[in-house]
Length: 339
Image 1 (tube, rainbow, N blue to C red):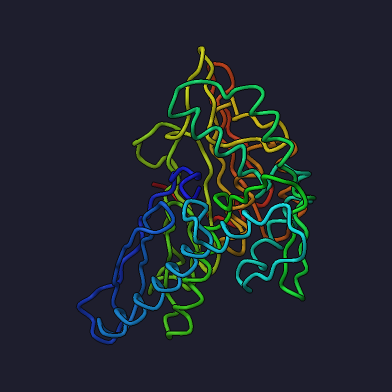
Image 2 (image 1 turned 45 degrees about the vertical axis):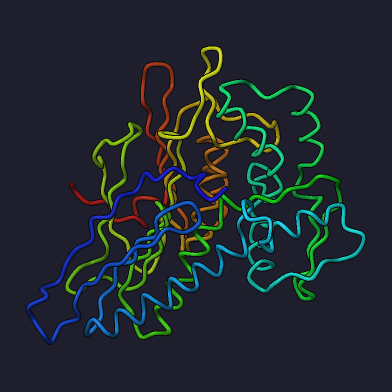
């Protein structure tokens, strides 16, 4: 499910003067993809150059959406899931094997707190949110037998995948938007656009800073839905992603269950939190934000410290108090600024 990461980041990009014809001008465009709205902001010499760059970037995003959707039965991801348990290795595209390889690495480092084989559980909890009812215990137990990152076997060089258990379903909702944002930035660079920001529903990848600015000014919204940003950070040539449950959750018998699932237990998280991760690329930031949400501040920040160039901010409700945790590298990487 591509909309599984709550959009808690809002853009407040700095503008150059459009009246100076010797300076690149600021252009914006947006399209819906992957269950989210993709916003692209870029600086280009003229509107023709910008339009060509936008078209190329959105074509690339749409290509990845068609490939990686778990809603579309004809997507490459869905076809791979239907092959479980595979009798022989299944050939997959370069994009899919690359993304699954990065996901597998994060699964290993997080000891299963991040896991793209979580699809059977995701499907159960989608129904639970619609019906406002806890998943049936027997179905939950059965779904858990089909979940486990070690059951996904990859041959990266040979570009093949195997699914070892019956009824496996892959769900890239915790990482695909970050990958698509990275891919769009790469397309823009090839089109000669060196100053751009791609916001994939809250998963943001950037290239060079706007003219005469240190970077792109990005607001991090608080836990409350529709509340204005309470913190701002400055980024350039890096990425940021936020995972939280301000919008997507269900209350059952007085307990609040997040749409963010712990793949190891099969249960939605019951603690309310928001995790923002800064990383060298959107794929890493997106996946880590999901993993740290599951792990919590202590184990989550241990994971962050293992991965070079990453930092995290975690805001968590504990009883009647809101506590803020910040990793050692977050302040250095994010360049915090006043509202």
